[in-house]
Image (cartoon, rainbow, N blue to C red; front, side, top):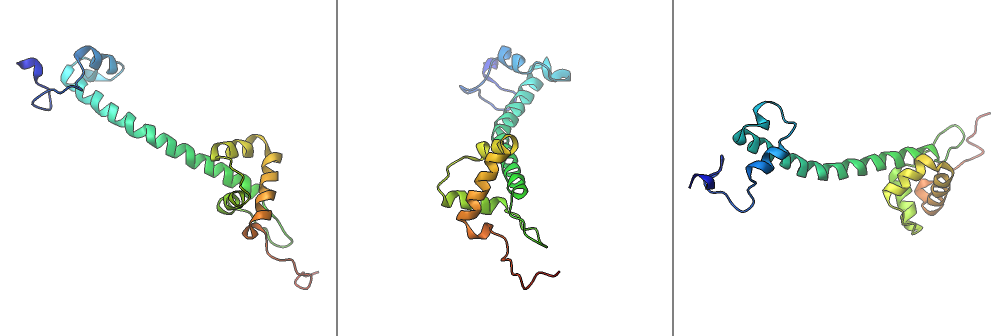
Length: 146
């Protein structure tokens, strides 16, 4: 039966789409990919593969964006001392929050760093008190040059 044959494989399985569904998904494609069934089927299959992959990549990209924003906020509100600027970084900030048992996710922390800088500054202070690696180098009065 010629209806059971697919353009790529010998037999069509349960997951095969009919023509109407393929053309509906191929709407907006360029050239014959929108109106020729063989080309449209291949392009739609590839488009569905891309969308599956990129739904996962979007989550990855958003998480990295949140981490960048938290890092920028932590460095902005970090500890500064005379003659040197020591800044809290993302890793030490998150470790300090973990030691203080502050359970805020990265999305909330990034929004706090952008829209609530004073609240985020309080979190940076709590984190730097909890984790000694967040504190700057010791100030010695003998090492200060007048």
